Length: 83
Image (cartoon, rainbow, N blue to C red; front, side, top):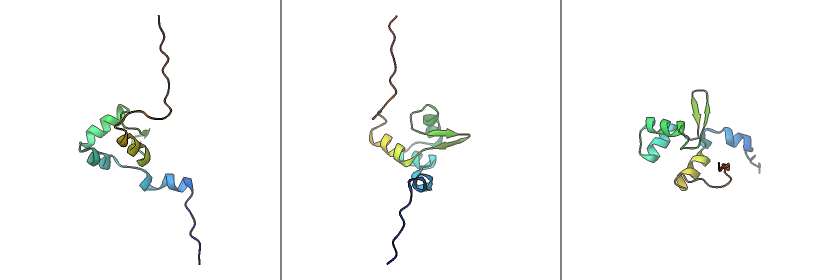
């Protein structure tokens, strides 16, 4: 019986299923595409901008959606200076 090869992490990260489209985000949030682009520009939805494209991983979006956009895990700490 032939053994099936498991996909590597790189293959999983490059698969189209690991990303979510702006249209799918708009449908899931029940808002318009332009509202999604505004949220991406403002950093509300976790994403990376490459040129004119927005890359949103399904994992990051689903985590954001599950936590209602509240930060979780390691975060950058802001130093507050008292003057």
